[in-house]
Image 1 (cartoon, helix red, strand yellow):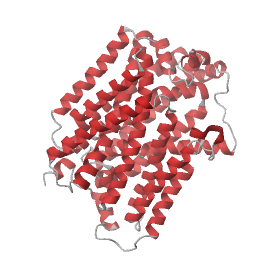
Image 2 (cartoon, helix red, strand yellow; image 1 turned 180 degrees about the vertical axis):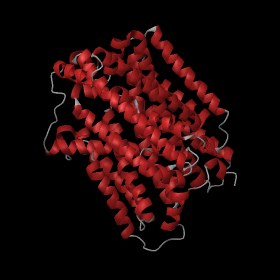
Image 3 (cartoon, rainbow, N blue to C red; image 1 turned 30 degrees about the vertical axis):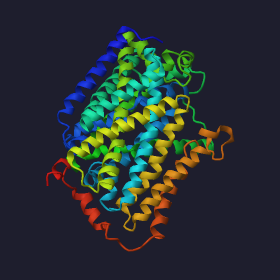
Amino acid sequence: MSASPLTLSVFAAIIAVTLGITFWAGRRNSGAGDHFVAGGQLTGWQNGLAIVGDLLSAATLLGTVGILALKGVYGYFFTVGGSIAYLLVLLLFAEPLRNLGRYTMADVLASRFRSTAVRASMAVNSLIVTIFYMVAQLVAAGALIGLLLGIPYWVAVIVVGLLMTVYIAVGGMLATSWIQIVKAVLIMSCLLVMTVLVLARFGFSPFEVFRAARAASPVNLFDYVGGVLPGLELMSVAIAVGLGTAAMPHILIRFLTVPDAKAARSSMNVALVLTGIAFLTVPILGFGAVALLGTDAITGADSAGNLATLQLAELLGGPLLFAVVAAVAFATILAVVAGLVIAGSGALAHDLYHTILRKGRSSEREQVNAGRTTAVLISGVSILLSLAAQSVNLTVLSAVAVVVAASANVPVLLLLLFWRRLNTRGVITGITTGLASSVLLIVVGPLVLGANALYPLTYPTLVSIPLGFLGCYLGTVLGPQTVRDDEATYEELQIRAAIGRAPAHQEESV
């Protein structure tokens, strides 16, 4: 497929806007707080839109619509169920994370456990999750953009990789946040406009859309496959999508970009409302695609249905709407990978370099330079891995990221906040157990071994998350029972979680 001049023009406009935001933010990116958490100065609605930008990925715009068109409500059920789950988790974590954290997730743990081993464990876990998810995004970007623009896969991957490197190295978190905000507005606008255009074809009746989709599809789009194993599979996927996405480092650090807990709550209110609206439009688009295009046309363009949204856009609005939706998909990928890079560079530069290697003695300038250097390093490694992973199953790459995030991060964060006895050994054991069990069960499961799988479920979260909790418990009860000098008391943690600390940019000046 070769791109039309109109499509190329819209793509160029998206790149120009994002680069303009980056260089504008670069003039304000002077200290470590500015670079890693935008100085903690985003308002509630700004951060809420940025969270929406993080949550509404290319999978929402392209993948979920395709799943609905081909699989029906079975696919939509776990997608929306997962979305509800991670929004509930974010509501649970939002205020404590803002009040306890500074730049990274390891800072949250360090508010109670000042052991370098705890910080290193969380930093390494964050890097593993970030790299796997970033490689999955870059592989998908290379395939999609290569198809849309008619350029080789490797060129598309390098272009996206270079752009994300510039965003972070120059603009830091402020640039990333505003790119997410612009992307959120664009993707919401596309979803709403396309929904109205689909409904207009059916007398503005959603039920007529559903009836037409049922008649046009060779499968029953509204049928649920029963049985114990399918039910467990559905539950496991929902938990993986929900808790895994909620526990992604680049999602959780968003709460460190606002000045106080009130702004964190406001962020979640905005995110809840807008994400809910977005997911109300997806069934209309998915069933509208199969009703207007037909299953054969959808699978003919892409067997997984990933191009259904673009096909529907072209049918509804001609070349202009196709170009806009394609460019928004491109902007979506850029925004997500930029968020991943800033999370990964924070783990490397702040947790490992500044805090552990330099013992907290590096200057503001050195921290910013380290953040920029590690952003380039992470981007380079991710680009190389993506070029080598072109033929690797994308589901495997993304599964490792979301399952590890759910299994290693969620148990530790919950017990940090709500279990008095948790200690340093429990944290390290929980992270290690969640990480190891996730990777092992994916390797011996259907994603890797197919029909010869030793474990029946595609996403092992039903087992790996309980193992993460078990690791925290066993590490705690089998370890030292006394409070160590480098651990804050549980009461101190609860007070700080309730009243917070100064924003990062203010704390630096104290």
